[in-house]
Image 1 (spheres, rainbow, N blue to C red):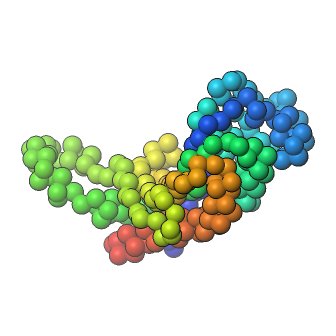
Image 2 (tube, one colour):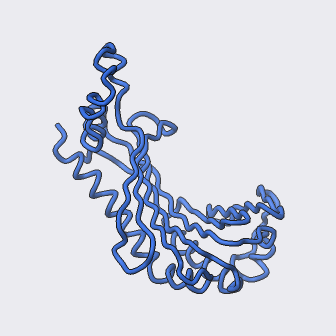
Image 3 (cartoon, rainbow, N blue to C red):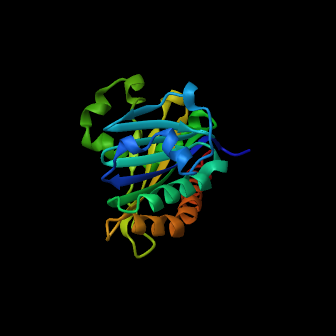
Length: 231
């Protein structure tokens, strides 16, 4: 039996640039044949000059601000469709200035038991250095000392390609989902040299599938390496 299990996953694409949120109304997506026609009258749709929020069919959630476009889905069956939607949308809005793209993936992970949970945090963030730095900890009672531990950790990885940017994995405790649960998020960030939609589309077409597989493999590698020798 594995020492951990994934209880939820989510993929998202985030674009930073100059957006016009009021464009992104359900009728626009339907009229441009980007999505199939659906009855959105029962959905909560926000369409303002500085904010658009739409829940598209199949649990695809779209949010657009003046400087950011993001779309996400928790369904693995829709990971390709959100890529296709972004490509179709900005092929039509090719004049949109876009300076950055984030190809993101997150997993909510439950660790089997308390001992495994503690050992995982202690291996990623050894406590002895913090006890040496914050000397008051040794004066606390045993119950108070037990609250010491990993809460959030972000690493910066170099890119494996010739694109500008970084890969930034983040692990944080996720108490909303219960005890011994963490969230592992990977932000695959690219700075676009030409700052335009055409460059963004090229990156998304070339790197989206690899970004997803890399994030899944990185998550598995970290979890297995930190838990494989836990007793």
